[in-house]
Image (tube, rainbow, N blue to C red; front, side, top):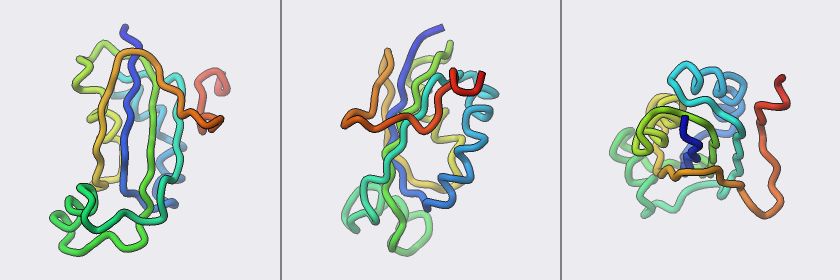
Length: 125
């Protein structure tokens, strides 16, 4: 198993994030990405219309994403998947059509700025 972190920027309604957080660890494990910690912070109340995620939203839904928050989500975990698959594995657990950009790297990443994890594996044991 390799320790990896997936770092995503996502356009997602706040309630949708709260709804998926409850099942996200199980969804990830079922896909072969075993989470150790999840960090999330709402970066902005909405995304600038000329930003890549806003343009993706416009392409998918035919309208600009008004008042849809921009989130940064970091998932640290262990997997045997290729590193290139880690970010998309996390994104596949998000609500269908949620525009995202992201990357993955070897090792774990903390959110920084003293922001605590919204979920930790050891807290569930």
